[in-house]
Length: 415
Image (cartoon, rainbow, N blue to C red; front, top):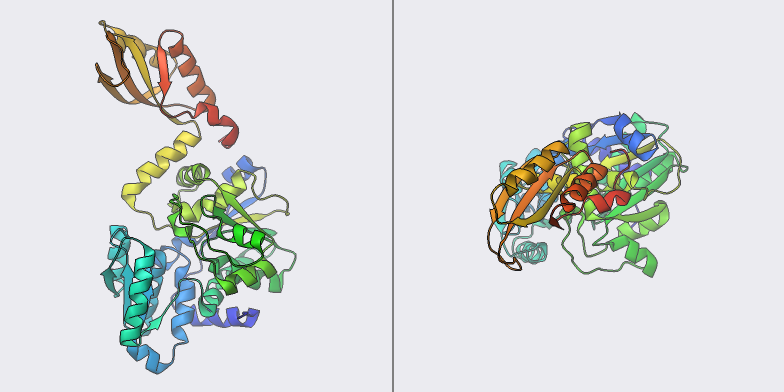
């Protein structure tokens, strides 16, 4: 079940007509925030918006002619679907992709745009996998697994080869981990050329698949839990990926959703990169000191950029809240004229920027004669938010709906 360095080199050749060489850029902002020399590997700018095209091209290129005629089938909610669809179109192979009915509309549209026959079934990826296996049985199509496949893992490993070509002195590489294909394949490639490089995988704190598997000493499934990083929310471990991770990956750590959202917002603001939460997990780990040990330079792999634009506002708002740049609260004031003006005057004097105001004369827990003013504000940071709340509390009862001020110790100092 193992793959070799030569397998990855061959995969690179198979994918060269489609796979882009994505930028590897230094970041002064993130270096200053983390106290390390940080570089960004922008796989969010890859064809189809993620690294998945690397593995798909390698797997589909090796199918025998009779299998190509019968086509391929895949199950995915997004990135793998698009990778398989583009690889199949490039190679002239019919592709059928089962996606959940809840899949993001842009991802469904993109997969269809690459030429796949998209079929929406069920409410989660498990339903899609079942439907894909049934389709394979009926049609003879080859099932293309998103990560539990040696050819897929070898293809993803081409990112590691490319990274070392671009930055030969890279010393620590931090890679988001879902099913484990990217981190395991890249680790094989990197360690073959530079065994001294430290490889760190990063999982969502809500779904620590390989952290759990390592602790158990065997591939171990974890319960599905909702996380903002849906692209790495994988519940079932891969045996070959686990074995390669054990052999070549130095550490696997987890990062909280709050810190992932913060990294998404920072990437937009500082690097001008639109990165999906799963793709920002590695940078979040670097910025929050989860990548312990290992020399610099450290490369954070931005593994994907396929995020629904309707979701961007929510993620960025949460990220800004984590940085103390956004907060919401309720101020309870006497039901007499001039109180709203007085509250907004305090905010103006303290240089808080009002984003929204709601004025309520009744509601649960609101005593007679009181009015509740619900407000969202933008501030310069945690200390500024705390200063505004403290001044309001000198005059009124204030109830925090979000509390970025008290999160200061968990956010990025100086951000």
